[in-house]
Image (cartoon, rainbow, N blue to C red; front, side):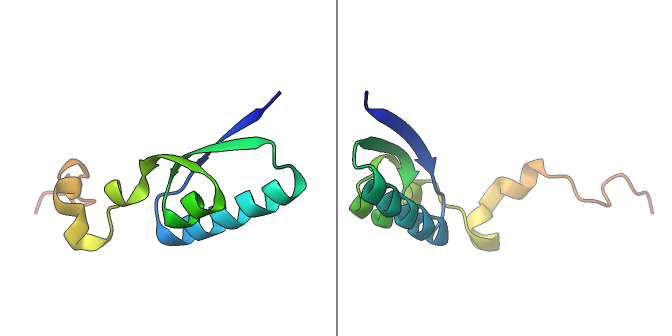
Length: 80
């Protein structure tokens, strides 16, 4: 029976390390189906990318946009 493995990565270094893991796993057992979220490295290693990480990536203060809107400041309850 074919084993199915969900593997997720949301940024470049994770994509690289996940791809290396997939390649090493295929060397031991090529009859495994990897699928999940990742980038070009994982795709090249043989992962069926169902969600491209570049569509989900949020990096730095500029990329966060309104992400801070739902995170209260540590001083939000402090009255001056």
